[in-house]
Length: 81
Image (cartoon, rainbow, N blue to C red; front, side, top):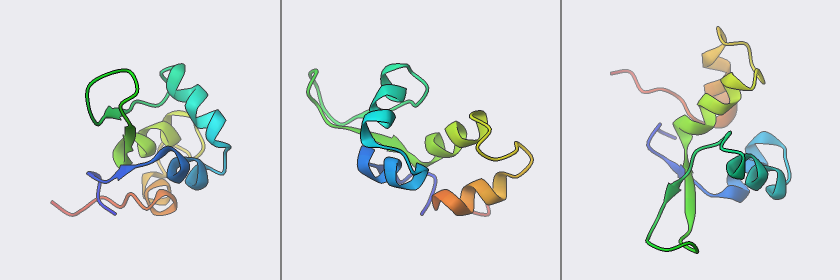
């Protein structure tokens, strides 16, 4: 999975081992940023893979110096550029 991948809330919940309601709460609390896929309040949202990785590192679910492990666990491997 690349950093450009867009993930659904159920996919993020599964990768973090959290309930979907917890992920939604973290979105409401602006701890996890989303991308809106259309106009209006009811437009679907997605989470960029790199945003999930940022959240994991910031939440100290992995040590900041262990970015490679966080990337592997979330499927958000960095591409060699």
